[in-house]
Image 1 (cartoon, rainbow, N blue to C red):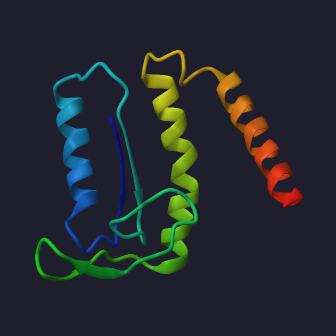
Image 2: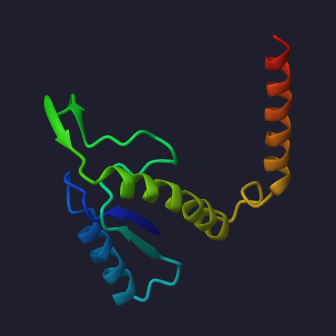
Length: 122
């Protein structure tokens, strides 16, 4: 179980919830790897790297504005830093040969390179 949370989350207390999750797992001697990472000045939506920072947005389910919180630079830094941590955590903890097969990555890089060559010819 991997929890990545922002201390500046204004949607709900995700960092506190992450701490409680880890405490409960430890209390019950949970045998699988579990890790909580808190980015103190990040908000709620810690997405893949380079996604735009959004402090608040319209939420159709509540019919109003939802505040996600966080500060722009620390939040973006959290997105960049947490992405490889998450990918490595998944690779190390999910028994799936495809996730651990680097040939897929190389094939995707070759495909991207071929696509770029085709686009440049247009």
